[in-house]
Structures are given as structure tokens and as C-alpha cells.
Length: 246
Image 1: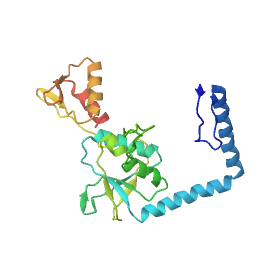
Image 2 (image 1 turned 30 degrees about the horizontal axis):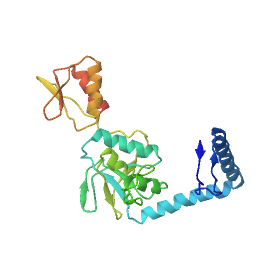
Image 3 (image 1 turned 90 degrees about the vertical axis):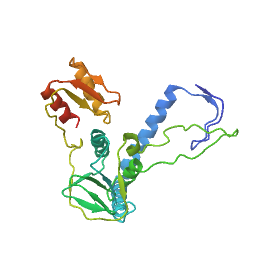
Image 4 (image 1 turned 60 degrees about the vertical axis):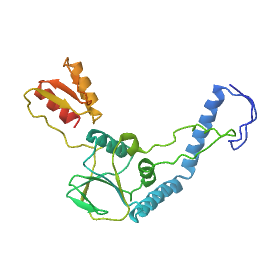
């Protein structure tokens, strides 16, 4: 690769010239070994700074603004809500489930509602996932909008279609910490029908279930409103799908 211009976005500006894969490998090795050397020389300071960052994040969240994010049970897609909470858990975020009904910011919530307190060590990551990003209006010399180099936003609630209430001030609630990385959601059941069974198109899980049924040789039809349905069917198989995909 040949670069004809000077790259100024480096500690030591690189003048124009050829760039080879060997140079990129050497650069990464040097940078990686540099990080390891610093970590070895300053291990106590780094560990203490990590503790201090977590402590400061917890204290900031306990003051409010926000105090917590509440995930109501009445979601458009309960299956996707479980996936949303699981993504947060795998990123180190603590998720709680309420032991009884409660009230926050003037709104009533049912037992089993998931609560994500902002007072936790990974609060900055939580805020990144929950709060919308406003991409700046950048234009070139001709007034045309500049295309972003990378992602312009990564708000998980918007990407996964999950409704979340931001609660600014502290409130009282009895909760239990969710230990599992895959957050379980209430499973569904199927009652024996006389003629047909309908799968709502609202859930992404419906498409997974439909593909499993098709793979088993089941004829699946679609209604004019978009919902799927099958004529009669194996009630045990349908119950298994309902439990697996809410």
C-alpha cells in the first residue's frame, strides 16, 4: 500500500511512503508488549485505579441521574427482551429481578420486573448501551453530509426494540440478583386447539419456530395480517417451541 500524504493522527507523524503488512505486525507487537511492560511495572497502581473507577461509578449511580433502568414485563417481544438482558449480563452488567410489585417515578411495576441499578462498577458501559447517541451534523466543503467512519450509535434498547424506563431518583424495591448469563424469561404454553394454531409475527422468535416446524416437514401458512398459523399439529412439539422461545 502506498500513502501519498502525511498522516498527522500519530504521535510521530508518518510521512508519505510504502506500508507493508510486516510493519503493521511489528507495530501491534510493539504496542502489545508495551502494554504488558507497563502493567508489570505499575501493577499495583493499575489495580488500585481499576478499583477506584468502579467505586466512583457506584457512588455516581447511587446519587441518581439516572438511579436505575427498569425493564417492564409488558414488552412487544418478550423473547428479545430476554436476549437484551443476556447481552448486558455478558458485558458484566448486574441485573436484578423484583421479588414483589413496586412503584418508581409514579409508575407501578409487577413482580418479576427486571431492574438495572446505575450504581455499579460498569456504569459507563451501561450508560453507553442504554442512552441514545446524537451523531453530529458534519458536512464537507460542498455542504454534503459526511458519512461516519464507524458506528454512529449503538443504543441497545433501540436496536433490539426493548422498552426501558429511566428512573432518575432512588426508590424502594426488593430484588434478587440474576446470576445467570442467559436471563430466563417466563415460558409460554399452548392449549390444545380444535383447528389451527397461530404464531404472532410480533416476536423474532416466531421466525425461529417457523423454521424449525418447516424443518420437521410441517406446513406453515401466513395470514393477511402477517401472523403464521398451522393446521392442527403436534401439541407436544408446539409446547416445546413455546417454552424455548417464550
